[in-house]
Every structure is written in structure tokens, then in C-alpha cells.
Image (cartoon, rainbow, N blue to C red; front, side):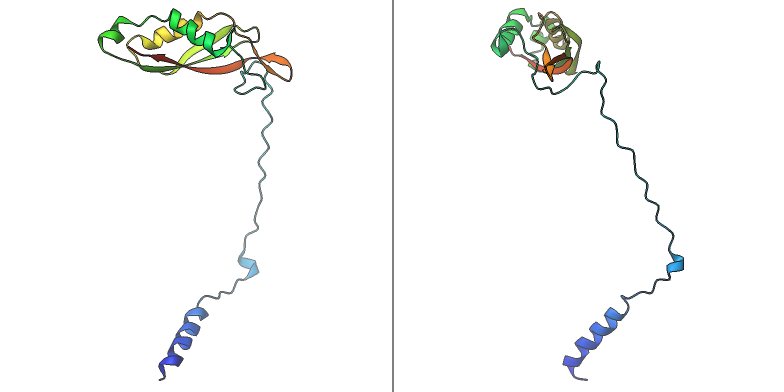
Length: 148
């Protein structure tokens, strides 16, 4: 047999097994299930994460850094163990600018977490965040750096 004829014959035989016959009676009907669209969360008490006008410390970022530096006391345990780094604190700035729900997102231990929480809880009222011209509760995350 001529080698030039073998290739087309092999290809023809290989492709012939690729076809299939389907009997419509064997197919089950497909059921389409539409999931309900979640309604927007319009709970006025739930803190926003991003708003048109974010809350701010009175005097701005520079005043916030000065406040933290002035109020922070490095815990003795952290000094003795040479621990430094950032404690990430989250809190809510209320509609009136008060600070609430203060907790750590990521801490360092050795008293640094408690010190960061103490400093944040002692902050003066902030300028509240606004959405659609109204004061709203806003979740705020703040890294507080401790360096020896």
C-alpha cells in the first residue's frame, strides 16, 4: 500500500468514532433556577466602609500623628523584649464624631495592642463621614506604629 494513502485512511477511521447519535427521548429537561438578587443593605445602623466624604481627625492626618505620638506610652514588656511594628486598629466613627467599637485587627502582643486601643479610645471626636450629604457611621482602620 502506498504510504501517501495510509494517512488519509487512518484519519478517516479515527474521525469516524467521533460522531454520536442522540435520541431526544433520552434527554432530561433542563431546569433553570434563578437565584434571588440580594437586596441592598439599607440598615442605617450598619457602618459604611467607603463613603463620599470619609471621616477625619480634627486638624487632619498630621494632627492625628502628633496626637498618637504624644499620647502613646511604650509598654515596658515590649521595650524589654525589643518588640516593634504596627498594630492595626479598627473602630467606628459615629454620626456625631465619637469613636466606638475599638478593637485590633492585627496586633503585636506584649501590651502594644492594649496601648493602641487605649490611645484610640481617648481620641477627641472626629469630623464624621458623609454619604449623600448626611452624617453616617463609618468603619475606619488605622495602623499605629511602635518603634524603639
